[in-house]
Length: 91
Image (cartoon, rainbow, N blue to C red):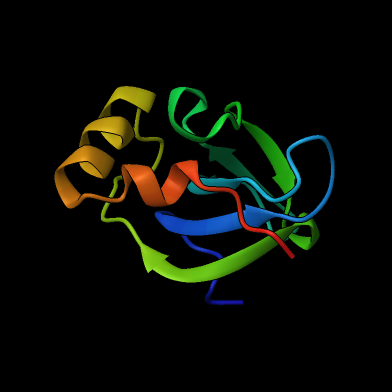
């Protein structure tokens, strides 16, 4: 369960945002996390998500718990991962 942590980049596997990448912003409990795309980057709104509907990837961002959309966008630009986040994962 250590793959589910703040800053982990995941792919949504269920719902209208299936295939889109998102970042875990906060861990609510063992079943739910708060994720964001951010919306301006990958199209995923900031919302609660079931961990069963996420596929964790190897990538990890160094963000603080509850980081703002702006902080995440700036970090993605700095690390050059903005384009990586924009491209959906096809399964």
